[in-house]
Length: 113
Image (tube, rainbow, N blue to C red; front, side, top):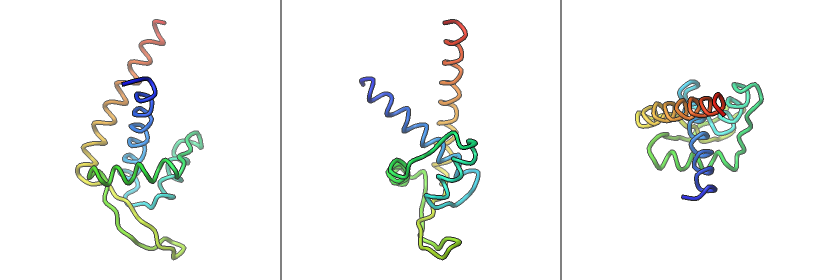
């Protein structure tokens, strides 16, 4: 796996973590609601583009980590709502552990470099 592949997987994994954690916290949300939650929860530091979000949601749905259903928004617009599945909760735990390990490794390198 080359550098580009590795960084793409890291970015994809981090987006998965953010989306899964958002759904674990907020319950069922439509895509735009997920974007807003991540933006607000990160104090506007993170901005998830819809062009990245929807392919990720589709992939997570195919993996069985999220389930979706069509419903109406607060403004009476039809939207697809996503919710975490049991498999998604297990994936969230694994992703959090991997992220924590990555952060510990980066901190260790920064401390000694």
